[in-house]
Length: 457
Image (cartoon, rainbow, N blue to C red; front, side, top):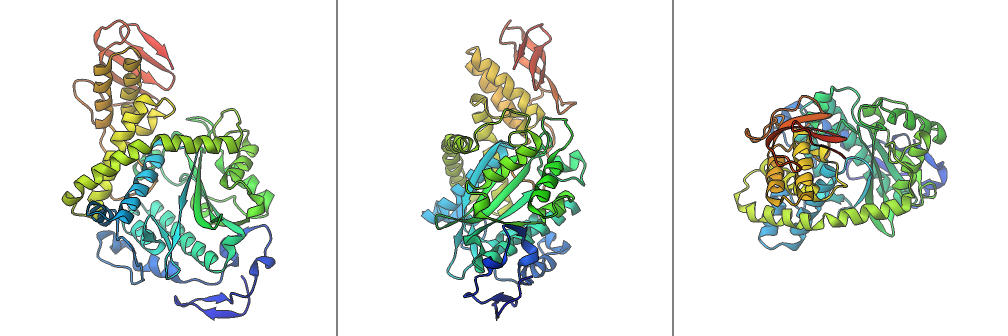
């Protein structure tokens, strides 16, 4: 704990005086919560949004000061011509598209703002408002509630670190592993992609005068079905840095670190490289190593290739804005449109893993790709429509209060999947022998038809 000359802050806790350069007291890597002054804002918000808040009966008695209250508000103001609101909607769409489509092997960056009151703004909302909504709507499962509380404490700690001036020389780094206290079914319902058991590594700090959060998505397993190795890598990183990271997933999420910028001059990819060095992986996956700086640029180009879809989703959201009556409906519409457009994108972009949309949808995407290669445009479009109707994709894990999605598809062309590694359905036509209504089995490595035709991926 930092002990220094203090001043009382508006929220009721104390901060060292601005003229004290507290960074001179710190090592290169340290546990964030161990060096900050006491901050009761997070506990105040968590207590005020307890179990009854899930029924929307309790409002947080803290100032949230949102520029836009939620996505619905931004959609409606953007539809009325507000350019700032439109920018907010686009940012929400852009983030959802990435998190929904790429579960490992990607780096993205989100700029943050600081309003006139000194509050951090993300997607046009204050940090308090973002965390209040997380606690209200994203905590159906007890395990997810605990994660939401850890994220809330981290958010307020990041705000305190910024007010202290720490983010000029340090980044706050948070490791968010996949849950280790939930069944696969619970994890899938909460939005985790269990095939990769992905972990987000987030770094928040100033770069070129702009406050930013970088997120790198790394796999917690070398390949689907393999044993998890993320905790092993985190344990080794903790030993390297002299901090304890050998903890269960939720405790790891709660253990934000301050890491000096000199230790990560290239940003979050430097942390990813250290993670991989411990495992012999690339972004946690059993793939050949690449240059991390060049790969980061590749991520930027890939994200740019999604931009036409981002703009199309944004336009559709604004067209529907007058008909949206609740914040939950706005979020559901974003999820629906994002899933649809990115399935269409996946049918033509073979770098997208179709299994992020669920096994049944993946089977139809694989068939759409196959039909397109044969020049069967109409049949490919039919498979894409079937893939959209079976979409089970999610963006970031949330444990939201919506009921689990049921596996559905067109009765004439699909049946339920029995395994996350294999999907069986009836294809309208084999693209090789042209036989109609062929029983087809799709796995991660092959497509096999009962007609005898097959293809290795």
